[in-house]
Amino acid sequence: MHQKLEAQSEITRFKNAFLTPLEREQILFIVPKNNQLLFAFKHKALCVEFNHYKHKFIIESLKQYKERFPSLASIQKIHAYVPSHILSPKPPQKSVQIYREHAKGEFINHAKNPQIYEKFEALRAGVKRQWEAQNAQA
Image 1 (cartoon, rainbow, N blue to C red):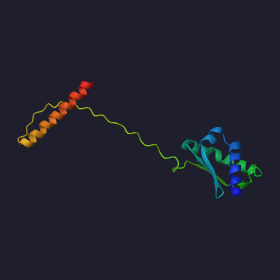
Image 2 (image 1 turned 45 degrees about the horizontal axis):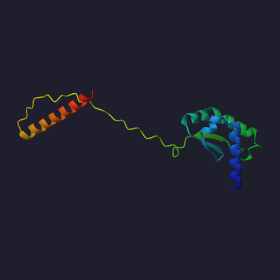
Image 3 (image 1 turned 180 degrees about the horizontal axis):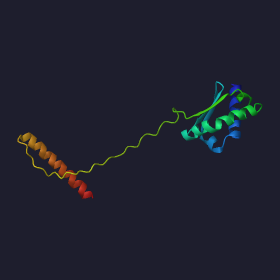
Image 4 (image 1 turned 90 degrees about the horizontal axis):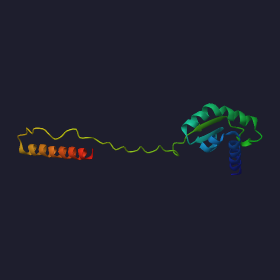
């Protein structure tokens, strides 16, 4: 337990000494694991930039300052990532699609069957209602 607290204290000192304020703000946590130092970031772009530009600097700094960070002296690899279980994607916004009625309900009903004739007339009435409602708003 004491070693873990010591390691966390060293990680905090290291973070304050070698990381920019933006990087410190965007880090969720840092954890040593199997000779690796894992940085969990809040933002994917900063994570990519960190992996590309910063990891070599950190390894060199840890080698150079072994006596200041003894529990981190065995670190061989630095890796930054964005944890998917912490940062879930934002739910998509529901968009409301509005369809405008183009028909006016003006057509000839050629149906011979009375039931089908009535269905077409009900359809005509619905189209006319929709047409009148949307044109009353415009």
